[in-house]
Length: 306
Image 1 (cartoon, rainbow, N blue to C red):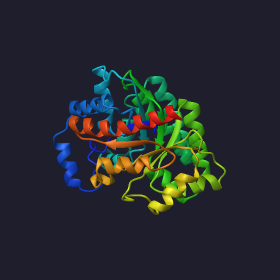
Image 2 (spheres, rainbow, N blue to C red):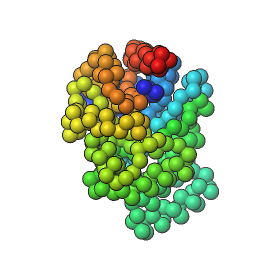
Image 3 (cartoon, one colour):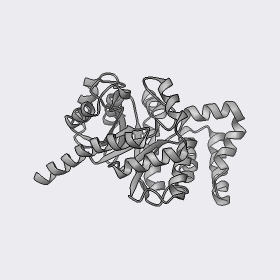
């Protein structure tokens, strides 16, 4: 494995097994504490931070930037859009409030360009143009406040959009998103999906390459969230022959598996290039990332002996 990422579920109140646990975690965490958890994870082996485009994560990065932390370099992997947040915001402040939110942190030049692009997108109702417009607005916001030691490594399309595009066999959306991310931001495009087998099948059937593409998808011993089945996802993983950079998420099956079980399972798989794990305290970060970084070190040692 080449990358070991800290996830953001604990920071934004997400638990796949019990929302009461998520609420308890949120009640004892504030922005400084969350920033400290991210720093601790990176100091103990995490190579990056993957996060939803969520106000809390923006504040965490702002805090790290202001404190000039962490000292070690790390990668960031933003995931957009944060669909639930914008549905809630639309209900609270309406579309006018959403537009104000989009424009609040942009420079005058950027606002002019954004309004023009956004107006054209809205008039034409072109989903690809709307996605490009949205991506530019949100990523610019985060690039302005990211820590100095952070490098934008990939921009990932949220599973809500990825899996919807798969359902409609929207080859154009994938192609245009790929081109836009590479040309505009000069980074690797990425996708989050809970339908990994279908994702790989669609890309192969559509003659689209997975080379230099990040794919974040569930892989765990329990088969949790692995659709349509653990066996089919593992078969799809074996079929790509290192073509894509597959980052395993839900590796602990929402807390059902132990660190040793998760680590041993990932080690048994071919073509996994990374993993993402959420933690909720500095001690949790130390234990978790020290355990997983041992797996990375073992891989490094193996490579040296080949």
